[in-house]
Amino acid sequence: MSRLLIVGSVAFDDLELPKPIEQTAHAAGAARVTERTWERHADVWGGSASYAAIAASLFAPIDLVAVIGDDFPKANLDALEERGVDVRGVERAAGKSFRWAGRYDATLSSRVSLDTQLNVFADFKPKIPAHARRAPFVMLGNIHPALQLDVLAQMDTPKLVVADTMNFWISGERALLGKLLEKIDVLVINDEEARELGEHHNVSRAAAAIRKMGPKLLVVKRGEFGALFFDGERPPFFAPAYPLEDVLDPTGAGDTFAGGFMGYLAHCDSQGGKLDRGAYRRAITAGSALASFCVEGVGPARLLSLKGAELRERLSAFKSLVHVEHELDALTLLR
Ligand code: AMP
Image (cartoon, rainbow, N blue to C red; front, side, top):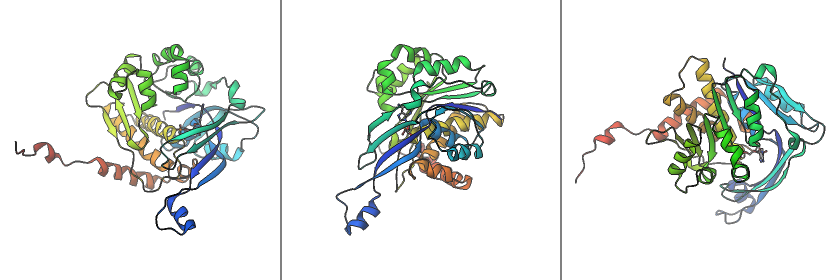
């Protein structure tokens, strides 16, 4: 079985989320909702590596490397182990776990960070356990690019390396990030980050510029508008986000997408499948389907309860979502 190493944050999140519309309408006794109310969810299990590991563990065995404080519940680690996540690389340090607080707007499409407390994460120096150094698939979560480079230096010869990053590193550590980009195969970022990194407002042009910096493959996440996959071919591949009626909490959707994407590729490799264009397209669709479950619950709750049959059903709904009869290109035109 091809193992996937995931390095990143494991955290507590304090989330301020708009109450679901039905609930607000019911409470107000109103047919139309003009005002939303917000609900605070404290101490929700979060962190980029948590979401990625929970998602990827549906497809492949995972080695997780992270740091937690002495306040982090053992029950969460047990839940990961039950899913086939090897947590021997999760270091428990004296002090508090990383904590992030965010507030979403009424449409759930944008958020502000209210607070980031690095705590034990401030001194995080990922140590890859000997057994995990052989992992052929590596996912470098959003941490300092110097640490991402250090993780790669500890690995044997991975087959596929994916990395995530954020505006903070793009503007603050561009030179180091450049070194990292030369060593990775796939970069997964959102459209705003792609524009900043590629220094072009047009996402396709920004993508072309980023691919010249190193990663031959680039995934640009566009939230509720899906994800684009650039591999140098025209057109790029596009996977829509599943149009859900009830979105509760978008936190972790991007990390879930990346975890599902890499987990699927590791699974495909285990089965002797080639990592070709078709495999990447299926991986992006698997990541999108998993992200659609992530946002249906607060924190990782919905992902943790997800059954294989539910995922298969949504994957087949995805196929219908984008299926177009082939007769379309034989359309008879009037002029
Ligand atoms: P996403 O919604 O996909 O951007 O992921 C949100 C998750 O990333 C939350 O669970 C946070 O705990 C975690 N997170 C937020 N800020 C950071 C940061 N600066 N470094 C690492 N992880 C973070």
